[in-house]
Amino acid sequence: MQRAASSRAMLERCETSSAVQVDERVIEVPKTYEEINAKIGAGDVVVVTAEEMVDVVDDLGAEEAAEKIDVVTTGTFGPMCSSGAMINVGHATPRIRISRAWLNDVPVGCGLAAVDLHIGATEVAEGDPLNREHPGLFEYGGAHVIEDLIAGKDVRLKALSYGTDCYPRRELDTWVNIADLNEAYMLNPRNAYQNYNVAVNKFADRDIYTYMGVVKRGLGSANYCSAGQLSPLLNDPHYRTIGIGSRIFLGGAQGFVYWQGTQHDPTCERTEGGVPTGGAGTLATVGDLKQMDKRYAMGVSMYGYGVSLALGIGTVIPILDAEMARFTAVSDAEIVAPVIDYSHNYGHNEGEPLAHVSYAELKSGAIELEGKTVPTTPLSSYVRAREIAQKLKEWIEQGQFMLSEPVQALPSAEESAGFRPLKHRPVKQEGGE
Image (cartoon, one colour):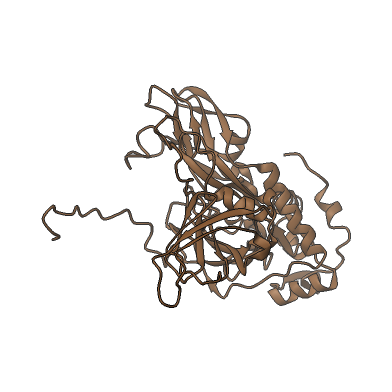
């Protein structure tokens, strides 16, 4: 790994320590959120990115690193399908209770109050040929609407209603702009998987088209989607500091974790260092769409599959003690991901991983699998993940981003029932059971 600077050089300006000297022994004193926020306010905080922390702990050891470093920042950027946005368009004259609606021809959710709408990132524009002409292009969908709103573009709203005494209007066709919306916020049920699969194509006699991209036949590619050592939850494997109420970077703005994400499953197998070897934890996130930057929230078209939102997320991890210093020093060589066949096994919920490979191997450009050298393809951008971690670092150093202690922890392996598949109970043709 290339070093941007010596870890000791990064720490030269830090003369204070969270330890007391007794005789010649150093006794560690755990830090608190309040102490770290006070240092942010005073401009005395020491912040490094998770990438830099690998070198810091390698040079200083976890105990000394915990004394010197106050905060570690993380980042990830990639497709996150379980994303969306809530908007309130305001009341027209005469009023309408919207029962069906489209934004730039993309159907949006209307099962709420009169003018509250939900934009699902993966919803496709009405009239799209989908996969009738395989592989479909999926040129525009909900994620693109979200990107256009963030960019300040006008978006066409078409709405229908059945009409009521208090909401007499039945049709509406107008342009809307994010500047005129009462509320517009990103609301995502599942983001930032702790770890994720590596997709390969072992059995199909053709390339396959998936949410992991185009996976080439004959083990011709290995597609992965994680920032590895920079990824948020991989740097807090047991969710000590990331939880409900945590302030985060979301789409270029400050946002929050509002719950565990759907499919949150901390019960998967872990390495001795606590790093999960499968998907594990997820985050549910929320943030102000009006403050976001389309560089970090982009609609993407997945060839032959559908639409998704490429989203940037970053977290800040307070170094409360030596254990957190060790956790945030995890390197790509220490993180492994499961290699899964997507031509049959994934779709049919069958089989075990073909192998586990490290992110160091994945980022090298090729892995060895079943006697073959398989080229690797990232769906996530490590360059942009690094950019997010650096931006968070700057915000903290400038006093623009304070730490928020979680009001409730994410479910741990001991508290979680794990992820359960659908209990399939086929409906009888002549009534239920």
